[in-house]
Image 1 (tube, rainbow, N blue to C red):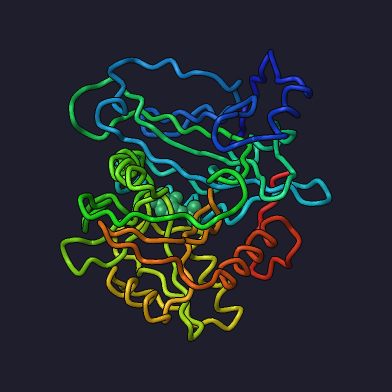
Image 2: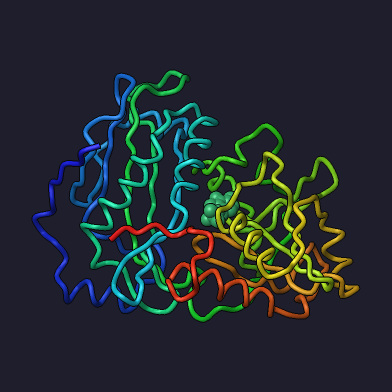
Length: 356
Ligand SMILES: *Cc1c(COP(=O)(O)O)cnc(C)c1O
């Protein structure tokens, strides 16, 4: 596709941008441009780069009423030689199309998705930070823009990509996060939208998030309460366990779990390092017993935004399950994944894709 460029008349000055890049935070600063592709009359049209800025929207736009919206999240990493790379972008392109299918939205060709990332990062490459653990977070998303209040799949959509320089997701130096066991709320159920990356899932995770915070925890873990209380995932991250006999266990994809690219990559890296891997049901009782008996030595959360974060204490009502004994395998996997992404560890599986 040929992208047209309508560049901003008021680019951020070098001084202002350097100030942002010195302390990027997460998701609060945005680059100068955005990608836009319209969907109308059954086809994607007018791919373009425009200045970053507000969306003028009709109050009856379908997304505002029935939440037909999906998104993706991936990062652009600056390598030592100045080049800029992203990680397994075709996985995100495919997943966005799976999400689209579930929300009755149109498919975007995978190569157009990846090209859109490349076009934006090329123009806004000065925004890719080079500090330790820093990257340019890329947020592709599609929403129903059709002006229509009836209930049916919209006929018009807008695909966009915006970008935001990012440091550590949880802020400050890496420390284990405490987790609240969500017993009052589930995140998703069989047949629902749990495997789709859609804004609606996140809206539904916010009340449980507040409940977690009210109990002094930073995240909730969601279960499958209608069956055996198998662990599903956190609101935006998958969960993995390391056992004392060198096995990585992660909940099997059940249809209600989001298939993380980080999760998938770690399953491979763990095998590369001689760990056994198991994708299976693991219940909250097994978690508790495993910590108490020493069978489970490490627990961590994984996703693009937070990479890999050790999980500390687990709170389940009045019960406190103490932090796992160790974090060494967690930290080794984190180092290796970040190393591949930032170009200091060999990319054995050809996961990197050059943007600039
Ligand atoms: C995005 C997301 C993840 C992590 O996926 P990655 O591809 O690893 O970033 C996990 N769970 C949910 C609910 C998500 O939305």
